Image 1 (cartoon, rainbow, N blue to C red):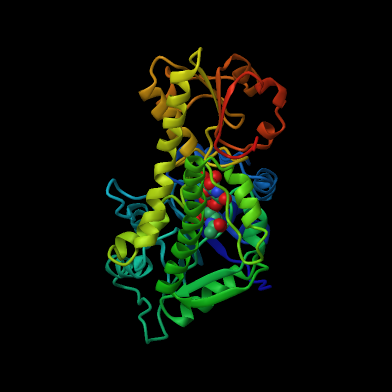
Image 2 (image 1 turned 180 degrees about the horizontal axis):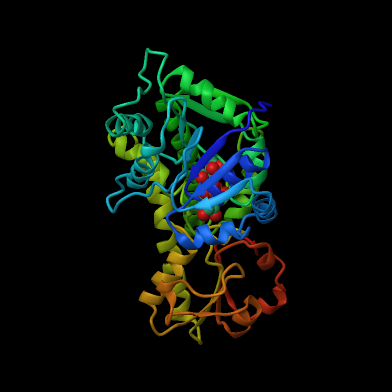
Length: 415
Ligand code: SAJ
């Protein structure tokens, strides 16, 4: 591993930026984490964290107390700048790169010859080049990399994060990294930074290929989950247990079907494939269809619950889980949350009980429409139990309590 100690600014202290900043600090770099949210900055400066991620709390506590990581509302002059801000999409699925642009504008005045700028945010193809072009206009006094040339004051590269929420701290170190430079020199510079903490291989390419690699990984997973979700609909129509079917088919040495669920959530897989569809709408037919299949699944589940409500004696529904997947606190793009929200709208007379061990108050959209309750109590009071998230604590619930309930198990926990 490279032993050079650098001053590094990480812009964005979210699910990727904060773990990355803490990891860089833990190998000895002097790190400033920048966030626009003053409460995030205060929390980190106290050595605490504002997200749930295994093993992150001790690391942040340690590096903040050692003075290796500080948080700030503004960037500081550094050897390297890592941008890890959100890239959502707009209403029509058009990518919204405005946070990346704001981050580039924030670091521009700090740039000095020799600095390295790395974009980590999942981004549409061409974004890294756009960041470089924006910096050119903001800092005409500096030279920036151009394809086919080698020398430049500032190096610019794209290196997507690929870590799995829930396993971020180990995957940050162990996963291979794809590093795309605007020029090969940029990629080399970025590699020497990542090699200070990454044990996986750092593979070099150009910026556009690296951007597309990231989008492709998540589109691949979306397509495969979409296949499982479509199977669950087909099996429901044909009266076949989809979980058993998948277990049987997966005994084939070249078949590995993923798990159906209530839909696909999180800020990555439910979003990134649209960046490909937006860039190549005519060609990206499978990718678009997978998105539509997965986005349709929450509505299909809601219809199942409405059907059960029309047959049930009582009208109390226990919804187990709101997070986008098991054992995380993240509600972004969560199909479980969407299902409860739609139910609140479409079944206003039903009593909705929500159990979610990772939150202590309901999201704004459910206040006054649902009640937060411990899982055992919610099940006890319910006529219909909807399993939405396969949290570990839910898997160990006493099944005998379900005996006289209607069960809608979207995750196959009680298959
Ligand atoms: N899901 C299913 N069935 C499955 C697997 C997942 O319904 O068999 C659902 C989950 O419940 C969740 C969604 O899909 O709602 C996404 O979960 P996930 O665990 O597949 O992925 P994320 O969003 O937590 O993280 C993904 C990862 N990408 C890939 O595995 C290709 C991660 O490596 C990326 O770094 C991350 O996206 C990201 O930030 O882009």
